[in-house]
Length: 241
Image 1 (cartoon, rainbow, N blue to C red):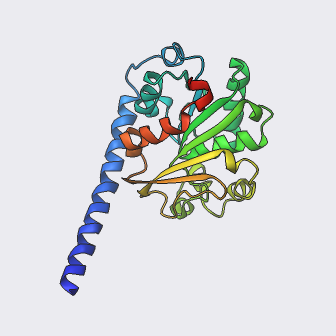
Image 2: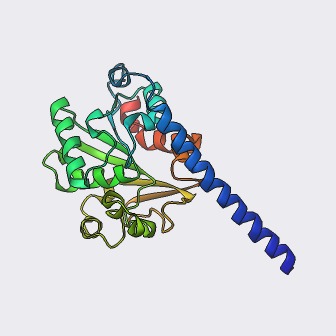
Image 3: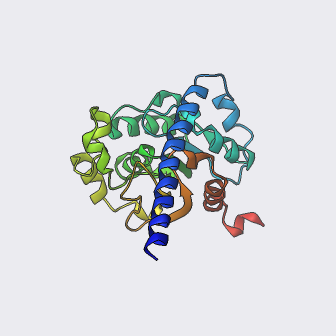
């Protein structure tokens, strides 16, 4: 029995170590691909079905918008008008600064009843916008993917301030966590094992969905995530008739 338990533990650790390595390889590959020409931002937002809510993508820290292209293309093919915000760059600014960039875009495009689909730090930006921005009324809800709503204990050891701001002890993050006003409008989707957020991505008062997946970055290309996102973007039954 002990040998069986030990073998099972070793197998699980090997599986998680492999998932960690594959996650970094995926992230590196998409950082490189983001430097290559891809579908234009205009193409993603045109041709949407009028009854479907517009979708605004918010990538994570150090992620250009093209990093989320696999999910963006799925949403476009489903008939959504998909908006990306090149002005976010690599999303290295503070959460309030980046929320202001998204807010300006919402106002500029005069979007109404929009859905934010955000990855990692992007979910913190989305929550801040919904709770504290004058343009927050333009957002119907947010689907947050792998978002450290309570921070990540690894972030406190980061040598870069932009990463340390994701620590559970960061004052800005603590203040955002204490604000529960928009949590009911958030769907938090995350992997059963996320090597970057060991504490998980549960958000009090939100709809929390743990998928049987491994990884923080690779989740963006997983068909199980795509199905979950599309399910929560489906129009009300009254509009389907």
